[in-house]
Length: 473
Image (tube, rainbow, N blue to C red; front, side, top):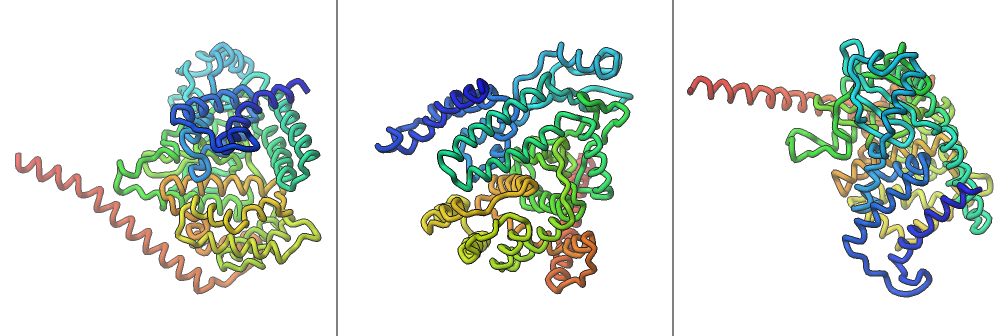
C-alpha cells in the first residue's frame, strides 16, 4: 500500500501539470502559457519520475518512445533515453553477480570486460567483453528486480481498480488486461535462461534470411542472472539518417520489419514481444537486428488463423469481416452493438488508406466523434493482442518518424499478400495463389532485382573513380 501511495503521489503533480496545458484552472480557464524551456524541463522531470517509480513503469513508458505521431518533442526524445540510459549499476554488483553465476571473478571468466555499460535498462544492463577471442555482450540482471516489479504491478493494479470503481469505463478494463499480460511476460524477463532459449529458437526460424540478424547465444554461459551473446553493432532504428546515405530507403526498412513480424506472428507463432527502438538496430551492412528476447509470446494456431483472416479482411476493406475477425479473436464481448462496431471499422479502414498525416487523421476522427465511439466501445484486448498492438505501434511509430504520411495497412498489405501462401500452409491449409498474390510476388521480385542492380552499380562506381584518379596521376 505504501508503494501504491508513493506512485500516486509521484504521478499526481505531473498529471495536473499536463491537464493545465489545456485548462489553467483544471476545470475552467484558457490554456496555460508554456515556453520551450518549460517543456524541456518538464520532459526531464517526467523521465526522472518514471525512473524513480520503478522498472515496470520504465518498461511501460518505453512503449511510447517510438510514437513520434503521438508524443511531441521534447518528450519523445526524453522517453527515448529510458530505453538504454537508466542510471547504471555500481560495478561491484556486476562483480558479485558474475561471481555468483560462475564461481570466478569477472577477469577470470572473460579475457576483457569493460567496466562502463554500453546500455543500462530497467531490468538489466549490458557490458561489452571478450570471450574466447570474440566480442560479446554480457547482460546482467539488476539486484532485487523481481521484488520491485511485483511491487510496481501491485501498485498499478490498485490504482487502476480505484479508477475502475470511480469511472467504470471499458478503457480502464483494457488497461487492466494489458497489465495482466505485462505481469506474465515480465516474470519471464528476469530469467535469462528463458531468454537464451527463445533467442536461439527464433534465430533458427530465420536461418537463411539475409536481411535479419539475431545474436548468437553462448549457451554454455547462460545463467538465470547473466547472459552472454554475440555483440551486434548498429544504429537504433529511430536514429538512422537517410540523408547521410542516398541509397538508404526508410520505407524498405519498415517493409522488412513488417515482414519479420508477419513471419513471427502468423507463420512461426513465436514472436518478439518487447518491440521498442532500443531493441531494433540497423546494422552497417544494411540488416535489421533484433535484440532482447526476454519477452516472447506464443500464438496458438486458432488465433493465428483468425488473425490472418482479419488481416486479409482489412486489406480487402471488408469492415464486416474485420469485426467478425475481432469476434473470433475474443475481442468483442457477447451482446455488443455489431452495427456500430462495423461502422467504426469502416471509418477506420477508410482513414487507413487516406493520404493524410496522423495529426490530420486524428482531427478528422475527433470531428466525426469516431475517437470517442472507439474509446467507449466494448472491444477488449486478450493478452496476446496487447503485444500485437505493441508491434504495430513500433512499426507505425518508426514509419511516421521518416514519413509523416505513413500508413501501416498500405505498407503491410503487399507483404501479407506476398506471404499469404506460406502463412496459410503454416496453418495446415493448402491454398491456391490468388491473382493479387502472383502480381505482388512478381512486383516484389522485380523490385528486388532492380535494387540489386542499383547496389551493384553503386559499389562499382567508386572503384572506377579511384582507378581513373590513379591512372591520371
